[in-house]
Length: 353
Image 1 (spheres, rainbow, N blue to C red):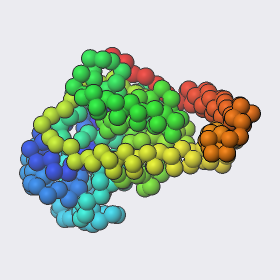
Image 2: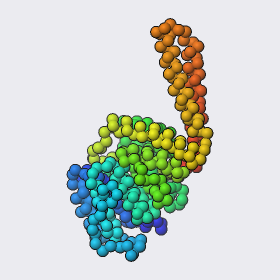
Image 3: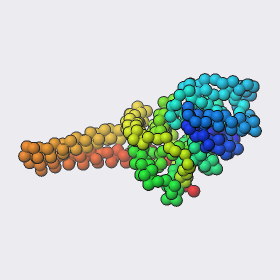
Image 4: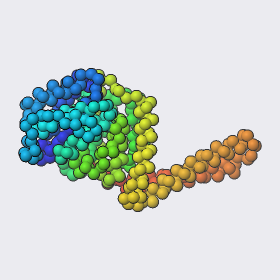
């Protein structure tokens, strides 16, 4: 336990042979339950997980939350989503293997669902690639323990020294996704949304609708949108970027296309749920009117140019009208963003060193 709170850690792993075992072995002693999910790896990841889990479980004996539920044997069961897991609650490391590859978001979802079943107070996520320093896990737990946040996530962009290990191309892509996620999620101060080092309270996990979480690499962006729609407080925790010798399995062309589409859909969903269904705020209408007017202004401007070139019509009147429409739409969008920032200001916390 950590400061009278039970702690669980979800460790997603896909082809992390040579890395995931060290992640298990170096987990802080105050972590009560470690859910290690093998997402149908094609190398020796599952065997490595089982070996290290057996060693750790022999050395550590967990106290069950309800002693009447402790099972003496370690029979396997099939959980929702086709994940095979041990049924022995009296263990620190819980190895879980997916029957088919579901993506990193799907692996984390499986771990989150097991943590909910076990009623863990705070559940963190640490990748199986060894890029997340276990010694700073407490920084993610403290804001939740002290009731300053419901969800904490890492931020590698806050200080220049912290992003030295990040390539310029990765930093550029991260910056773009940071801006798009700000708009989509409503957390305007939050940075580095791709950072998977995170922790979430039981209350937030139980109420955010984790069963519908996105299962591709944009799961962390998707989760931020869901947290905002439910009014949860999010804290950015400053941390350095760490990269090892592992190879990324991300196909960036597909990644950017799919995550961008997801962010747009989530943005529209958030506006509907937060500002029209659960409550009402005119910023949803400002966003809608502003976007429609700005797009119409752009289309009208293109038609004005075409009419000038192809038909010889005068450009001034049509061009001025198009510019006015675009300017008006842009102003409404800016006002909508300003209102969105004000509404969500109290839901964001920055944790600095």
